[in-house]
Length: 161
Image 1 (cartoon, rainbow, N blue to C red):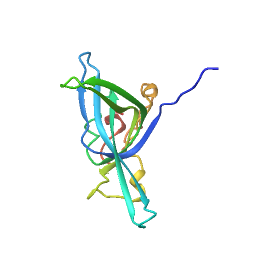
Image 2: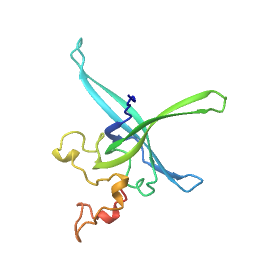
Image 3: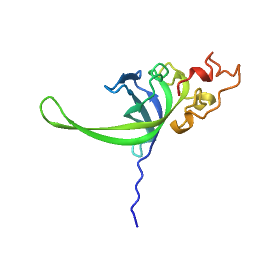
Image 4: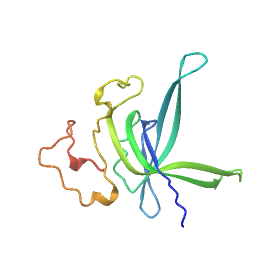
């Protein structure tokens, strides 16, 4: 019997910096950004609340128009897989880098959720503002009816993901 394995990552967090899109020599778009995810717990000894933030580097391939929507502080959902690559630094030392290679990215909030950006509170904080589709479904998706709007003057035709 063949062995099975799973490599799946799901993150819901806030963008730590504006996304940047560059192009490979072959013309493929590569968008990179970082996502902060936090967890809170109550310390058993002191009874105080503690918080820890993890940062994940994310790479999204062949989506050249998304960087303008993925700006620092916005809350997003990322689904993809972990990938570790290695390279030699300028001193010849081997360096390993692990990143999330995204299959789907969904913009959850139009505003930043960090300090001064709304924070945790509103019930609509997790309501999607713009929704992505799996790449296999993008070509077959019907367009929105005329006048359908996401509440910010952006129609479905304006959203690249």
